[in-house]
Amino acid sequence: MKINRNFDNLVPNYLFAEIAKKTSAYAAAHPDEKLIRLGIGDVTLPLPRTAVQAMKIGAGELSLKETFKGYPEYEGYDFVREAVAKYYAGFGVTVGADEVFISDGAKSDTGNIGDIFGADNVVMVPDPVYPVYVDANIMAGRKIIYAPGTREKRFLPMPDESVHADIIYLCSPNNPTGAAYDAEQLKAWVDYANQHDAIILYDAAYEAFIEDDCPRSIFAIDGARTCAIEFCSLSKTAGFTGVRCGYTVIPKELARDGHNIHALWYRRQATKFNGVSYPVQCAAAAVFSQEGQKEFKANIAYYKENARIISKALDELGIFYTGGKNSPYIWLECPKGMGSWEFFDDLLENAQVVGTPGEGFGSQGKGHFRLTSFGDRENTIEAIERIKKILR
Ligand code: PLP
Image (cartoon, rainbow, N blue to C red):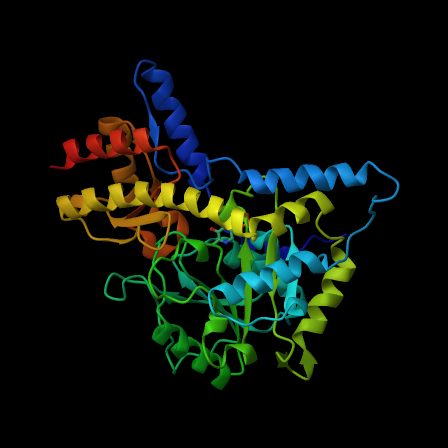
């Protein structure tokens, strides 16, 4: 018996364990001090009421013989797929309901999509970025190359014609940098992918936070239908982190290596995935209703006001940062040339504020730090006052 030896190549990621360890040690030594967490990557506001009502009605239907439902469709019920297509149309992007796959979230799909691609593809991953793309491809034994995000590029890596990749992960707005690509930048990636016969795996988990004219979908870009797959999630859009529901869009015409990609993904899902529960799909469809959208937009506006408060303080302190505008994340350069763990310790010990050291998201994260706006207003304001006090 042999295990998958690629797992030996995973780099242990102690980031969140180390944060938890340091934070609890500090709390135990200073029981009277109030710690404020500005590192939360999870939502804190409750689900839209419309979604919960729909979930209850869906659950009720399962209790009656006449309306009971067993296994759902692998690709999701038509009423949810249609609701997703209509949601896209609302921001001017045409996708077919039959191009939408409902899933249990973007983490699973961005990781699992690799099942349909050969192990010998070269995978390009932005640095820094959400770590799932790297680890999922290490597990599959693929070669990974990095597209470095730097301060000069405002953490938005662009294609380099001299470097070939077969699979390109893009995340916009990005976790952890909060930076979002504009249409011209995305067009450059789409052109690169079409020229290189590559596929872009586009993670739009934070699209609902976009407030300017940055595209909400890669399919807003000409040429994307022949080179891109889009992943999205209700986690950050509508607080579904614990409920679990996302969607993946694959254009019907997307083909590579003599195969239709939509058909391959259907085959993969039909083999390894038995769908999302009916009450959750009812809730997902309700999120996209007029009332549902109104409610989740109010939650996002709340987080974004927190982000605005954090960004304003950084402006006042003259600290370089990205994000905070189209994103719940604010990515800053650690002040006074500090390393990211050094700044973590400084904030913990002197301001009792917990954030996330940037190096947990890639080597370009060294010397950088992520703050999030998922906390409550009062705590965000208090944390910012404390940070200003120690950095002035
Ligand atoms: N994609 C990105 C960029 C994320 O930051 C996250 C969660 O933090 C996810 C996907 C996970 O989404 P889901 O909860 O739908 O699995």
